Amino acid sequence: MTDMTERNRSESPEGETPQTRRTTRRGGGDPATRGRTTIADGVVEKIAGLAARDVLGVHAMGSGLSRTFGAVRDRVPGSSKAVARGVKAEVGEVQTALDLEIVVEYGVSIADVARAVRENVITAVERMTGLEVVEVNIAVSDVKLPDEEDEEPESRLQ
Image (tube, rainbow, N blue to C red; front, side):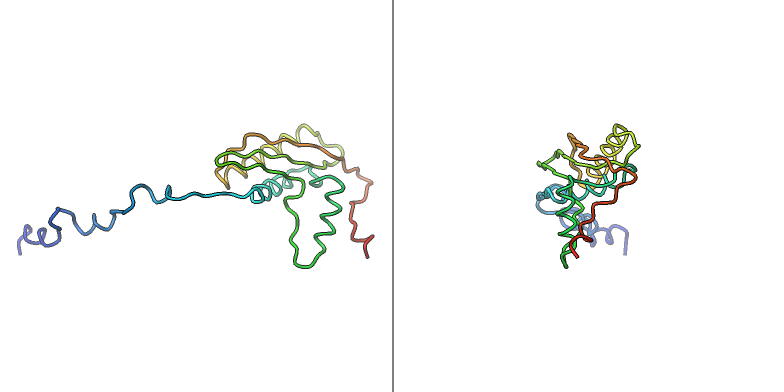
């Protein structure tokens, strides 16, 4: 067989080879742009909560009352740890805004801890979700003193 005969057998009448036919997609456009992805507020809250807890100087998340209720809820069999405690997210289609309530360790610079929390939360949320974080508001609700015991209602409930 000649080279020309071989080429004619592998080409379609329009001149497409089997290789080009395989890469042709129907529906038009990049498959990654077909459809919509939505991210729930709770997903962003969990990511932000975990990222904030990773910062040195953050003792806990949430107010004293929410930590107490959370500790009771954590004792219920089958419930998961409240990683989103102390975090409130408002999620739009491409942006999100976060409010965090934290308890800091005594002796740390609150301004430095707040800056580190903002940086860590923004990095984690934007990397994992692709959303733009427009603001991270931080409320410091308490300071954990060295001689204070952790508020653990488990001992009082038993």
